[in-house]
Image 1 (cartoon, one colour):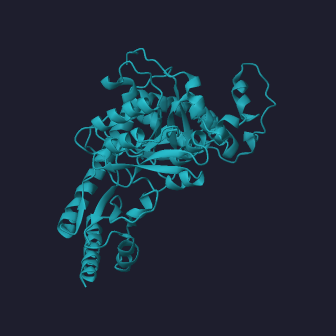
Image 2 (cartoon, one colour; image 1 turned 30 degrees about the horizontal axis):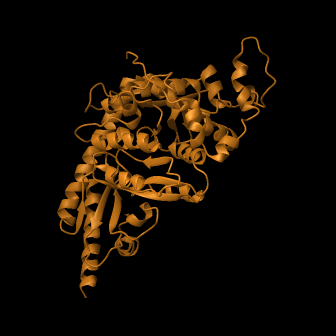
Image 3 (cartoon, rainbow, N blue to C red; image 1 turned 135 degrees about the horizontal axis):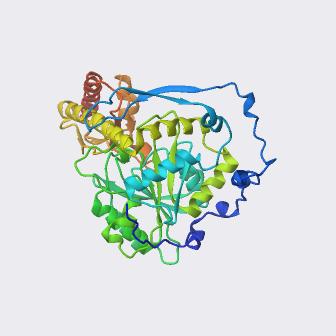
Length: 448
């Protein structure tokens, strides 16, 4: 890829965005010196690393699917992979705070291939123990207790407690089937009280938003970027469903758009902090995520890691890299397209069952990415799905999540989130039959 000159926001730009805690945090006295151990000829007495000769493991061997040669085809057999020698020694030992170098390098290449972001553009990348780990540390790095934060709403339920833990005021920005509402965002920012500091951060899930399943359109993304420049805030782009897109036309990420989109011409880059995850595409249990964004913010995240959990697990990083390196970027992307196709079929099965059983009893928009349907129960006089879902539906043998858990203020809502990733077609059909009966009972009760 040819390098196009790009202007980066200076490191000094980020100082006002960092929290008091992030600015006050001292570097780890040991881990900050780890890189010096690579100095040729140096004899290190620095770290209390256990002697690897005491580790009982001699090799790790595993097999994995080969990536499909073409989209829509099944993987062509399996490949056998082994960790041994120096690779295994590194995997069993303490490693770099921000991730093992081979995996970090591979992921840098992925961000270049997928998002067009080159090294030397003011950004860097760190690996974490899942993207939730990195999200938590980023929030601590960017927000002080009591700060205001802009939050796409409905929003991922797992992030609400992170903001609550800092007593942040979550300013809800409405979202619909086209993603975050720029009309709502602009109204909030332009109506902000004079003299009161505006929020410094917007949190959004642009692909397959959890819980709504909505994917933000290109025009919405362009306006969000423009608003970020006008009102001086950073975008936390939480994108665990980016590689689970099964819509008709893929929209570029904020991370890509701030560099390459025509609307960004002449604008410096550095307002996007992006979060990726392998949980939905390789393994949820391996707990590997990665954050890409401005170097000062990533250093603050790494500083937190150094004092909290030292590093992401070396062994799972090594296993992940061994597979990804064997596949290559093209193989990885072919695999993700296969995963997307798998969930497209799951989506279609679920929507067909919705049409059979819930037509006239619920309203929804079909997702283009992710694992969820977000639908409104049509029960006259009932503005809260919680009772219906938590009690009546459960008693009939079906479990889903009431929409209130995805609203920062916990208000009542008639919406429900249903995950379609695991059930067979027969189980989907039965689950929605049971939900239909539950809704009909609730409608009958409301008419009395």
